[in-house]
Image (tube, rainbow, N blue to C red; front, side, top):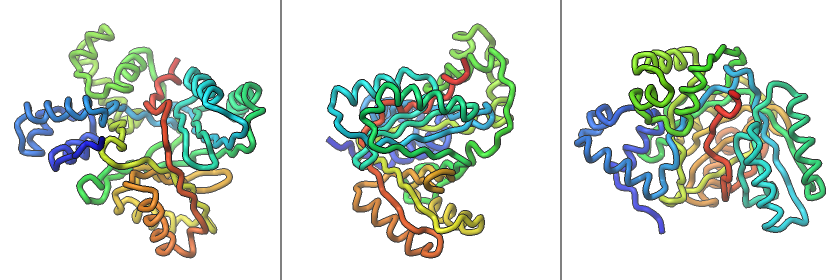
Length: 324
């Protein structure tokens, strides 16, 4: 059953998707509602399964890591084999994200690696285990990404922030690691509770978090949502470009930001040069949105493929697994 979001729910989700760590006191002032009401609504959205996690998103480039997506077209599989694949990928700390789709690409999984040798070893080990089921696979690497807020909730243009744009590696000590691991999927944990948990002080924790943000190791505090709970679905779009042009890329990026539905704009290198991720009510609406986009950029967009993400067996976006 679809949960009916009212205007206050939408405002809360939109605000938390921009900064899921902002205090209730700030939210209550912004939304002109009593803090007890805000606290109740957030708790309710969690109980309904709409808010799955409050995520601390780290910049992979600042950790000296590159992101690769591996697309798998499978054959001769069944539910048991698919569960074995999910279990295998979930156990691998180098695997950041796993998705199943309603397209020819049965699985997509993302990995973070320091170099191509590490990538080779991960893929080779997976293929040794499940290669007999792989009909086709395609690899694409992230170049840079733009993260947009889910402003479709309020029918407004999104706010944007760059992610994985620089490859400047930053030093992270053990205290930083402890802080990041605790905040990974619980970005709203108070500084007092965090300090107690890691054996530090509130003052030190506040300073360290500010420093991690300043050094762009922490990119954003955002939400992991189950949008299907309120009638939307997650779509990934493969976009084939005629020729990459920086000017056209900037215009298309701004066009996507203004749509509100698109929350990831990712430049790639590989079989295709661009991926979009969006929330839409239906496949028809997602396809209509992309059709209009292609009409607006006929000399830039060659073709596109809309992919419905049906499940995310691993979707916490927890990069702290890479810190060990």
